[in-house]
Image 1 (cartoon, rainbow, N blue to C red):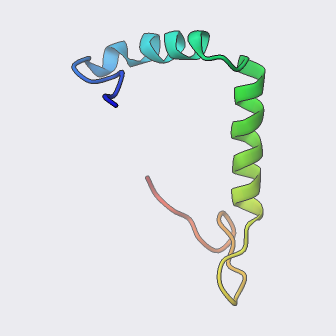
Image 2 (image 1 turned 180 degrees about the vertical axis):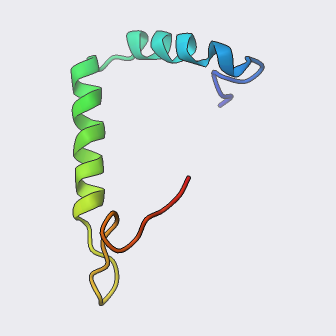
Length: 62
């Protein structure tokens, strides 16, 4: 599957994203709920035997 952003400059990415969200079969509210629930799960997860947590012990960078 090719990226919908391929061959487009970053200045066009916002409009591409908006079009993708509008055409997606899930509602915007459902998408936002899934994203926020996923991030909450990530921040509540514990890693390893020491129980390290993202945002408390581990601070990943993009």
